[in-house]
View 1 (cartoon, rainbow, N blue to C red):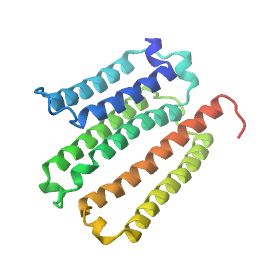
View 2: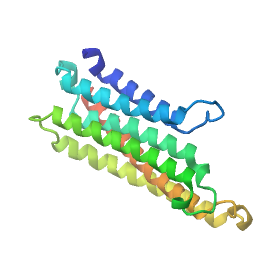
View 3: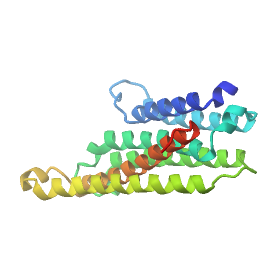
Length: 216
């Protein structure tokens, strides 16, 4: 059980599970006569709830205590937002048809998958907060890291939106005819996700550096 809660193994597990299941959900294997979409959905839900149950049952270890709650949450955010970002990139072609999203069943299914990933992230984060009841969850160091990470998030989002604006502004109109309004809206969502992922990654790296005593 202590191995399950070791920081590095836990982070690697989250990254592999999140990205792997995101790829699984994309339906790239629909040519096979198997209900892989439903199997992927069921596998993801079971994996999340099993991890939640084990977190409730696991005794606290010294290794877990050495990692700040903010760092745990940041690494979890890196894994889940990364999975959402990969999923959103792979699902982008589904938004190309010039149809409102509510009349595009493929785009609607993609949106539900992304929503499921966010719900799983929220559930796991809340379970960890309950596990840390009685501990100080945030102090001045956490506020400083959040401020720096927020600056990186804004920079990443601005860069993505600026790149999109330049692309739309300087592209030939004939090329833009292939991009529907739902697709452009999806690109804006990707910009927001990129900023959120950058925030989680920078926060996790700053916590890791601080924990190892590396000077700023």
